Image (cartoon, rainbow, N blue to C red; front, side):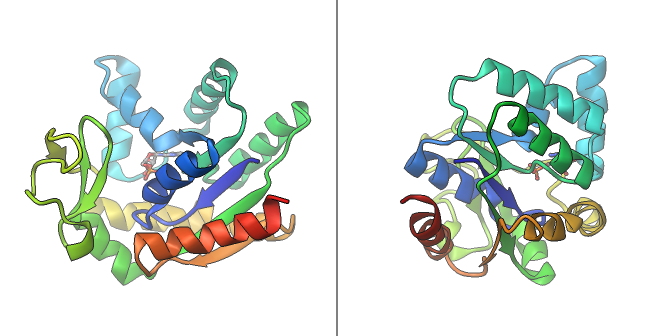
Amino acid sequence: MNIILLAPPAAGKGTQAKLLENKYHLNHLSTGDLLRQVASEDSELGNKVKETLSSGNLVSDEIIFELIDHYMTETTNHQFLFDGFPRNILQAQTLDHILNEKGDMITAVFLLEVTEECLKQRITGRRLCKNCGAIYNVTEPSLKPKNESICDKCGHELYQRDDDNEKSFEIRYREYKKQTEPLIEYYQNQNKLYSIDSMGSIEEIFHRITSIIEKEMIK
Ligand code: AMP
């Protein structure tokens, strides 16, 4: 089973990915996480990626393909949950090609649908744990940590992503509309797209996704 989570920024891809990864033992491949790792390195590439991430623009396909190739070759679990990849048509075609070469393919693409207003609100409140990667939101009562700067799960410090502000959001959202939204039609044409109303609670959204997986994909 190879799954793609397709969604605008701050729609809850990362949160759902962690839950799906655990339930179905998938290999969670987040290009955003891989890029943040590169950006934390003190090198020419690290500084370049850091700058692009904070701006809200997309990183070049060349860098993405190199990261993906390295990750997919090194890993042993080949059932992937793609989070934040592909983000444009060329990336989708390349992914199809990589999987085809291995006699594999994409099983399903879940499109997480959230209104722009709600995304904007979510993005400014999002906080992440530096240690375990847990995701919180200080503007949503059900997702608030007990203490605004400490992780409930492991007690480490929480931080806000450099690109989680209104200015970067405008650019990230514009890039999503221009480059990523065309993937909806791409996967509809392959009969693989499932739209998920993602305005409810984490549990409700997870249930909507898993019901489809259980009904359509796990025989
Ligand atoms: P995310 O963690 O998915 O929200 O991604 C954070 C940022 O990483 C995006 O705003 C882009 O700058 C960059 N990024 C992540 N995945 C990709 C990708 N597949 N192609 C290009 N840029 C990406």
